[in-house]
Image (cartoon, rainbow, N blue to C red; front, top):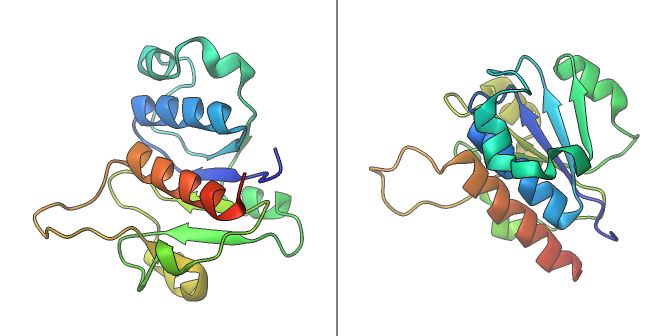
Length: 154
């Protein structure tokens, strides 16, 4: 695919979210990066149920930790950090082919220092009701991936 998108899940905790995101990545021909530790085993039945029988076809890369992931990044790779704590909306970001869309774990999101280090490429998906703590991770990834694809025109 011309967009060559990468979805990065930093320490995902809920297998059904990861399974749904895996299905989305396969549908959009995006690469899924799982940064350990994971809150589940890849063999978890909830992961398989959400990912159905697609998991074997998915381009998925596992990384031992954040530092191991960073070592695999191509020089100058465009990275976008998604957090409800970011200042800019994702509408304001211009996605590039080969972007790495980076998401934190379901309970805590991305670490605060990571958001601060990458403030210029940290974005949020707006929420209009303060009673909602956050969006479901698989929903947020879907929003981000399809916005990137829309912008890239593919």
